[in-house]
Amino acid sequence: MRPLRIGVNALYLIPGGVGGTEIYLRELLRALAEVDARNEYFIFTNRETGPDLVPRQRNFQGMPQLVRARFRPARIVWEQTALPLAAVRLGLDALLNPGFTAPVYCPCAAVTVFHDMQHKRHPEHFRWFDLPFWRLLLFASAHGATLLLANSETTRADMLRYYRLPAAKVRVARLGVDPVFFGLRRAPEKLLLTVSTLHPHKGLDALLRAFAQFRRGQPDFQLVIAGLPGFHAEALEKLRADLGLGGAVEFTGWIPRAQLYDLYARAWALLYPSTFEGFGMPVVEALAAGIPTGCSNIEPLRSIAGDAALLFEAGDVDSICGAMLRLVGDDRLRARLAAAGPAQAAAFSWASTAQATLDAIGDAVRAERGKAD
Image 1 (cartoon, rainbow, N blue to C red):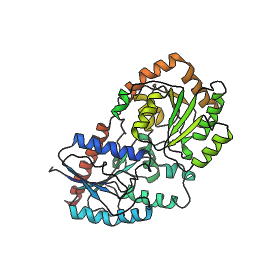
Image 2: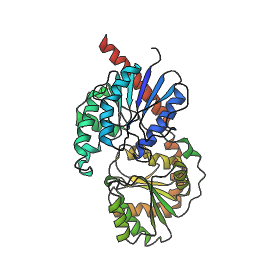
Image 3: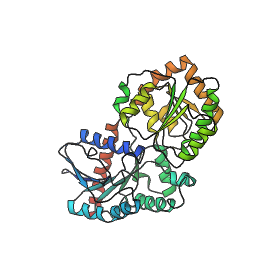
Image 4: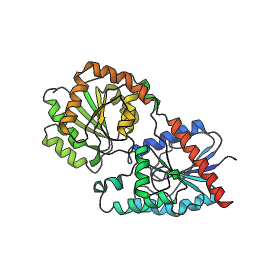
């Protein structure tokens, strides 16, 4: 097959505004640039996207678009109209859509990535005026794509269940972990860390209640929750005040990677209390750094962590508090988890994610050409 002309639909990206899907896109593009010097890539960006998104390799080219992602209706209209026209003009062989949505009409092979199916599993966590658009656009994206990529077996199973798709249409491309985490120089302080967007499904209300209980016997510990303010931010701030944790719990908001690395380096333990996940990147990051980690006993976290993390029951305050106490006070457990974490995390790499994505693009192009023949 001749070198492919591949478009990447990055129109959804709002730097510091879309949580883990931003990290995913940046790491995926970086890894694609490392593993693929043959095909040509055209990265469609919006007005908010900085110049650092597009890799500097010669086969990567930025395609700035005159639309702002923060005004979602305009972005959606642009994605459905101007993007397909650009694909025709550039003679694209494939369009990769890494953020759920895609043009309904795509003049080339389309590979679309789903990071979770929360709008189906937990529609109660969506604003009433957002939910119809999520349902319509993601349904259209799923059924219009040549191939779909899910970031975990859990997400793939949800896609097959809710959309009744042919099994061969949905593949898994697990996410990776930034190699920096394996080399962090740890200097633990009395700091418990959670890396999470402040959304209702992240289980942070139970975490705060558990921390208040934990702190009665461990008053020197602080809790830092690093992540994008989400729909639940105001309620969590009120709960922090109601529990008298104003000086003990910090919400950092979205922070630069260097600052995040520093938090991982200083963390005594990481807690990830989510009640629903598509993948759970912070768990893999913490394991790679050798941080004693506790997470909810749900899929896909259970499979990602293996025996390298302490599991607790999602939403159960006593269970979470018990995990905190063990992660702080059980030296044998801490040593075992610190040793097991990097070995478990070594199975996750962005190079593997990029290769799985590239394989899907190639197969999608062949499938579309087969239809034409």
